Image 1: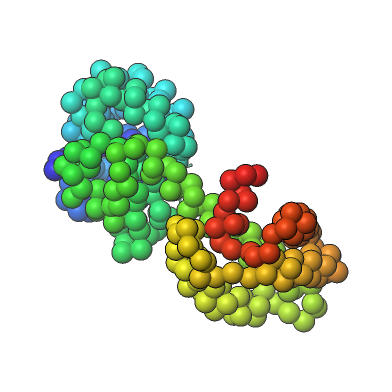
Image 2: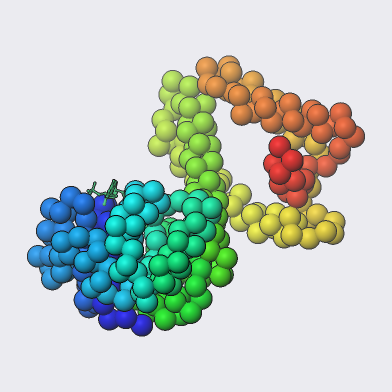
Length: 288
Ligand code: NDP
């Protein structure tokens, strides 16, 4: 494992990553387009690189945390010669296809490549709450695990380099639906003059927490070919979807999500379907 590391990109997240590596005692070299963003880190002992190339040259391991892959690619292309024999870890958010493309390019430059996804916010970096997903070069991961663990628990998903992005975006998608559900339910509940979002949320959190406990049961159903452990009548689920749509409309809240889901349930019933199951719901999405 290296004792020196470079960080390219000192936005909110890159700064937090670099600060954690510096605090852990690694020789940390930093570079950012807007150079002032390095000042605080340099005051604490980080080394300032004048160019992205200098940052790459300074350490056997470079962590990149920029706005996106295009920016990463443009920056690294100007310093491609510096990649040979080094390890590149890309933590900027992107798609599996972008990860595969950057891996191919980085290998052509003679670098070992790991792609990653940060499941944390800057303030939780290097706390027990933070975890980071990695995929790609397994030897590079094993060699650099100790340093990667500083930023948050390092979870290696496999050699297929797109996996970290795939899981990262799937996890973000789950979060996004959860927040969308929160916004919708608050809009409905607070249509009543005397209710507050805070008061309603005191009920929503324990309710969603209880429902979240059902997810491993549903996941087991998705994975198995046998009888589902959890099933509801499609007609029951349809009635609830219609009621949620109507209650939203009556409250002056958009109901399109529930209207679409009612339509879909109606067509499943019309096609002779009877049960609403987790694997059926997932299959339905694939087909759609
Ligand atoms: P910021 O907007 O704070 O930082 C963006 C970084 O990209 C800055 O270093 C910026 O440089 C750099 N940049 C943008 N355009 C260019 C360019 N054309 N050339 C060179 N550098 C450029 O974003 P974050 O730090 O929050 O996010 C960085 C990555 O981390 C993103 O992919 C994000 O999805 C991911 N992430 C962020 C989380 C968060 O909570 N913040 C959580 C999980 C992942 P400059 O300072 O010069 O503008």
